[in-house]
Length: 496
Image 1 (cartoon, rainbow, N blue to C red):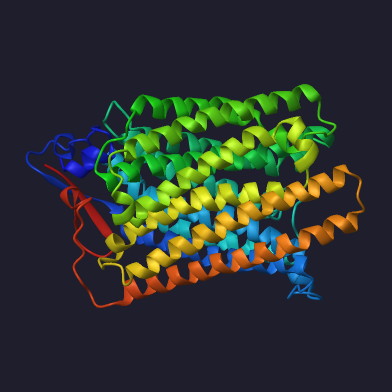
Image 2 (image 1 turned 90 degrees about the horizontal axis):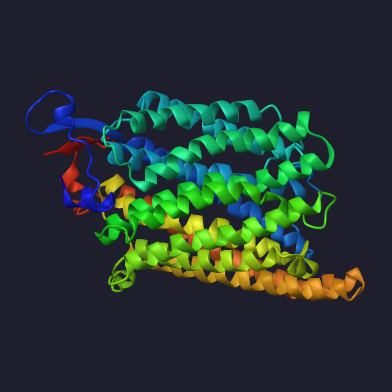
């Protein structure tokens, strides 16, 4: 078995396919469809580009210079929903699906159920995102935060979630290994949680549960979409790719399982903290506050596991931009979780409720953590998917620094704006005073957004140039021992 395979699974080896098939000697089985990995990455980047532009357009309304003024389909409320939905479903979900096609077959030694069904899922999912964007622009949004998808799209999303679960549960169930690596624990749970979370948020409040009960469910949906879909997918990817890139096993397999069970137990209980000081019974609000603080402790186990795995590889920050993305993302993760443990308390909520502090927090989670980690995966994989070295390492460095400065500056800016707004409102100052005081912060936020968009353009140019430059040999020191690339689309995984 290749050394890289052992490292990536913390000494849990892939199954011996030759013994399973009753054959002697090494067996080559085509199980990884690189074409699907690339397709989801490209599709995700299309939606990510639109989302970033929508976010910048939305920010200009606070500068009294909104570029879509007077155009109904570009009204700020609709553009904001396009921005958030395309990040969650267009960019992050596409990125996660692409990584699943790369990771799951390698950890199980089994192919997904069907590559043809994979292409069907890909094209149908892109159609769902396009239809969602169209529906939001024409004003058919549901009054559900992060669940604004038009009602006629929701059934297709649920069917898609079922197909994704079937596609990836197949190799997990077929895997003959008794000990399953923690990455597969997170993925297996996420497939179940995604369907349940989406149904809870998009059907129960709309058709079954009215009033404040619906508000409680909406709080669960808003937070569980991040905590029970985005988070387990992100943690699972980190636990696979960081050991592979560093060429060392994770520091503690046991600690990774503590994080898993802590996430499963505490995260579903904290959604009501989105509606503190609301008519929802106070015992539910208190429970959500306690659960939120508890889950931040659980998250700390993941951060400790990452940095202890990285310890002793300090030079990797200079050598590997992929590790740099993971390192900074983990740092942002600790900051945002520490922040969350304080901001959910009723004392903090008296100041920051409904302020820009919350907006900055959301950006640090979705962009500063999980997008940064996907950037790290992309930096690691794109040369392997194209068979070409990066066209420009300088552009990769510029992309990293501009994104980090832009996101970090935006977070600090919005956090400061939230404190200014909160204290002015607490002092019962006129509303106009808080608007005037916020204007410099909103201007700085837009400037930081320009840096992020510029960095994104640099990455797109680099990816395009890398894929289009003359064919050159990319030496794969991470996976070469466990696979043979027989064509541009299908990787073959071998066992010796």
